[in-house]
Amino acid sequence: MGSLSIEHGDNVNSDGAPPRKFALAVDSENKATEFRLFSFAAPHMRTFHLSWFSFFSCFVSTFAAPPLLPIIRDNLNLTSTDIGNAGIASVSGAVFARLVMGSACDLVGPRLASSSLILITTPPVFFTACINSPFSYFLVRFLTGFSLASFVSCQFWMSSMFNPTKVGVANGVAAGWGNLGGGATQLIMPLVFELIKHMGSTKFTAWRIAFFIPGVMQTVSALGVMILGQDLPDGNYRDLMETGEKTKDSFSRVFANAAKNYRGWITALCYGYCFGVELAIDNVIAEYFYDRFDLNLRTAGIIAASFGMANIARGGFLSDFLAARFGMRGRLWGWWIVQTLGGVLCIWLGKTSSLSLAIFVMIVFSVFVQAACGLAFGVVPFISRRSLGLVSGMTGGGGNVGAVITQVLFFKGTRYTKEDGITYMGIMILCCTLPIMLIYFPMWGGMLFGPSSKEDATEENYYAAEWSAEEKARGLHLNTIKFAENSKGERGRKRRLAPTTDATPSHV
Image (cartoon, rainbow, N blue to C red; front, side, top):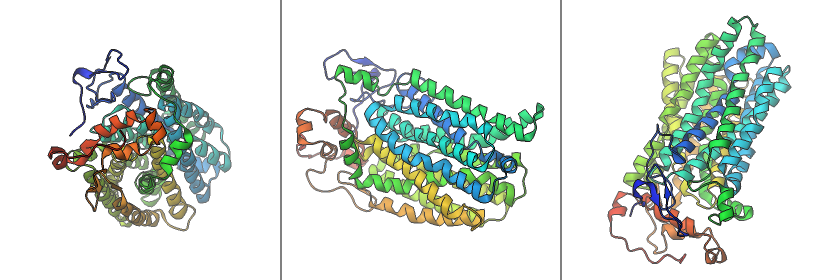
């Protein structure tokens, strides 16, 4: 049985109010069952574009420094240790911030949570123009890095706006286009630097003025989210709570529900070695090509930009395609295969000594490791309905933890060369991808085993278990049951077409 689609975007409200009208076809939760990439229709596609652009702006700000690092390190007398510590700082702050962001999305909504975070982290971007010591460089990179927690609101928002049959592509493209900021900044910052220098500034002044560009981008994106964004297809959290269409949840129960679901911990670990690797590479790749192959700053930046630009090939499309044929098991197998191949390519990148081959391997490696990120968030929305934001935050935070561990082990100081660090990072990818095999859903199965034969192994029972008997009696789980019904496409094509003999679900 597939997800329910309402023609012409009409849906009937449970309170008997007139049906809401949408430009896109929607399901029983008013989530879009289609994805029109170049549409700006409110609220679904408008949300998509606000989400990816705000995350893109944060990525540009966070990684604006590495492309100019050869100039900045001379101006501030940075040592290899200073540079390594700042790289760690840029991705470590978001670990805690992503957990907080996940909870904030669950409790107050992604619009307010995202715009507030982006505005709070904008001042450090502007203050980068004023720094004059290794410590101040460390501090602004640490504070700016908190903005990467906007990734969590990006993924939460897509999962709140799009039906399970389209959530993979929505999550993947939004995150992928947002992550393009990591590549775009490799182009933007050197070009802006050269333009300012050409206008008469010295190089030590030009790099400082250049930081006003990411600062303005981030400010504009935050205001756009605040003014034009909408939490859910039906409206904003605050308005829906006032009308009784949404009930305010308990943080303790949301937290406990997420913490006891082992699947979220596995996705956090594995995501640490796809997105975490991407963050680590963004910090070192320009300097790696500049130093190892004796390139100039602009050429190294253009090559490094090609790594981030491969985000346009995010794996969300592949995740939804595999799910349509093989269900959740297809999503899991796809994620494991793609991320494992990414690990192999990472090892190869560290071993090659030819510039042309290194560029080729880096681009192919980028496609695989970033596709793995999209495949990961093709799975995350199904782990929990009630604690979606926190599970997304745990997984996203895991990405930053992986980046921190990788930076500390392989790219801090002079213990390893950049090429050896990249090789060892590839080995870590292979090892930390194996736990995907342990993810198992009773109603859908996992990589190694099919679904449970027990009569209570249904989507309704899995998601209804997140609510207590008293909460069910108050009807607080009813939206969860709608999500369960719309998620039956994860059974795979053969099981969807087979006659169903599901027992009456225990949540009734």
